[in-house]
Image 1 (cartoon, rainbow, N blue to C red):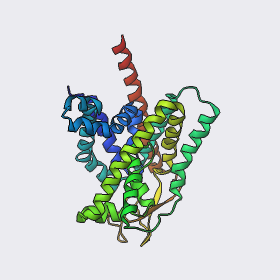
Image 2 (cartoon, helix red, strand yellow):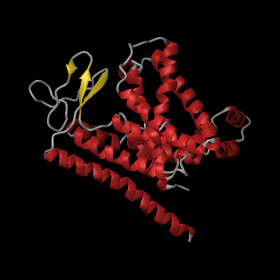
Image 3 (cartoon, rainbow, N blue to C red):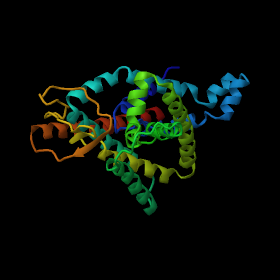
Image 4 (cartoon, helix red, strand yellow):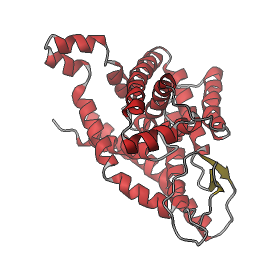
Length: 321
């Protein structure tokens, strides 16, 4: 039976993965499918392979939670081929307003995650702070040099995949820091360079299974502690998606932007230019009309998440009755 809610959650996850600095894991966490997703992914192991070769398809489908994954990833694909185009337009023309809305979404998400934690002890607060500090430190890290060594590309795949699973950690941003965003996501993808794409894909699959397996164990044995760190990741990611920032291309320097934060050339014309290696220079906004519009969009983002959670709680209570 088709579960439309699961597909919608998949669409939300896919939408998040399109946005640099935003993690699909954050959406999975706040939509209450995170633990089930982790457990399903970690079951892609030797037991699953044995069931496949023995022809026990029914047992395999149940073991890997196939229909759950099918519906979630159907939603992800729908997002990549539909919502992604809208987001690309908005990020091209109105990046400050778009970032502001997602900034509000993350604030609302962080509140829901922390609310879901059980009574916090001092070490939970410490783990929360450690989780917050990691994405913030990423903002100040300079990208290392590009490296086309196959083992390093494999490692990039393993590390980059964590951005799909760990809330608040962006896979694309990790690849930027590792120095191989241009090599893998731009050069290799556009030229179908299999010497780069194959080891990266292998690393991504290994990373997906490995990280899912570790997280599954941690959530079972240290639920509150693990969730505290993940909540910290979400809160810390606010540093990555602060709306008011200049893009810095290491080849050309600071990139010109119009009043909406959109990239422009020296003549003031809009350009769809993605720098190969980007860092951001953050700044405080002026208190003007744009600031108040952005503030309203942040509030709209918070209301979207919190409102959805309230409606979801009411629906769940009615079903229990």
